[in-house]
Length: 293
Image (tube, rainbow, N blue to C red):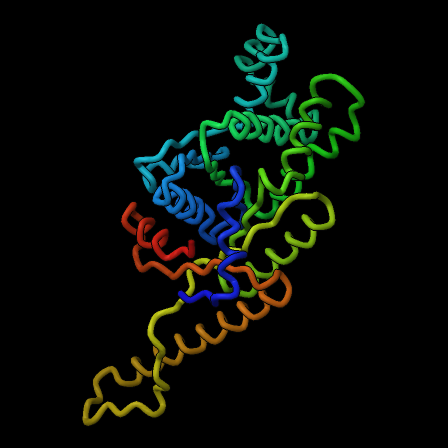
């Protein structure tokens, strides 16, 4: 991994805000990147909280020494009702499963109460860095725009107050930013660029550097067509085919990196591919150590 010196200042901005919401297409390593950012922040001496949103409890195993909390939309809505004088109603709704229907009937309310909980954590001042393993890219736009929609639809009351506070937090570029994750392949990059355009058009939120995950950045490969294998003939054709495939794969990754720089800006964090099938805390430490500071 190499990041040009002139990009260092921009890349380091990922740690300039207390709240960092990580989003990306499924399969690009969003949870891994969340763990890496949290690990890097802790290694630099920050008090770090990691938050999972309705996901599988994977982060606790990747950063076992850090505090990890899980926030579900249903639980956040129930807590919201408790805090605003509807304790008995909330218990009844939760016990009957109707609370999920309430969230469905009021579009955006689930996103609002989850963001409201994140707002409470950010405002508490207990942590220097809160890393949120956020929604997939497809949901990221609605997740971040729902508060503004509810604010425009509701004139007064606790929902309007909550929406005002959340919109203020999202729009404060010194408090919150969104970090988008991709891999250097055509379809994920297309989706990331579309997400960037939608966010820029619909919500005033700071977009941090793009994280490019699973980059093949090992030593340069020779052209298999000019490599001499001597008298050896066993598996030579297979070796040449494998080498050529990897060279083509690297070339495609390089083209996607250029496309990202042109359309998303030059600020990128590049993380190398890890051979391990199942990531472990040691892999996260290795990746975190390679982040620019």
